[in-house]
Length: 213
Image 1 (tube, helix red, strand yellow):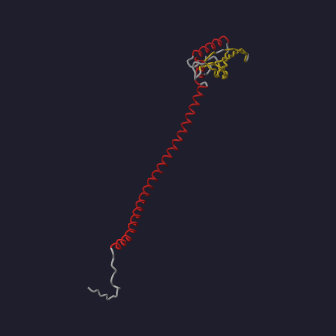
Image 2: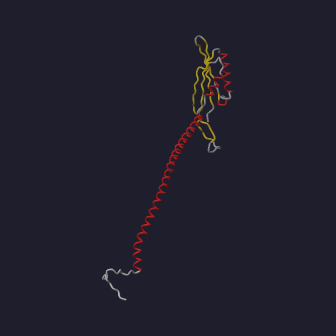
Image 3: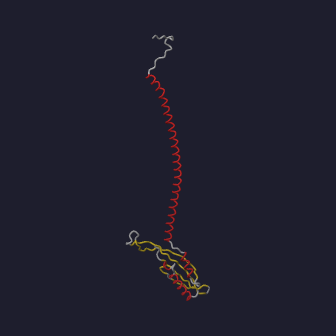
């Protein structure tokens, strides 16, 4: 067989080998695959980033809510501590100071009409007493405690009548359920003077309270 080349070698295509075709195909396909993989990774990462941003926003909102609750809790704890401190101070004050309302009512209710309360005052002194040790009840320790005295100045006219009324008043106070258990003693002294040409008797009554432990 004879081949006639009318184009003088210009129109006859070169013969392609399978290896060349494969290399050419791979050269075109690999960048495309890489591009597809990169796009897929980008899209996947974008979705993951959006999800994580939403999760982060939810966490930040929860932190903000909890921070507000924590601030409220902290303020409540401070208020609670302040109230507990006031309660403790009030309890100590009640334990340290004599409550006078019931005592004054008892004096007014038991005072005989002919007698006149001219003056009233309260004095306080301290006294050392032996009390059981809080940590060791079998041991006695010294404790400084307040001892209060209520001074009453009573006025009367007829001495004989007034003497009897003051004695009666003293006994009523000692038997009183409110005042009696708190009293240690009630000494009484008297002074006679003349006012407007009339004899007037003045009685000094001291209600000495038991030491306030």
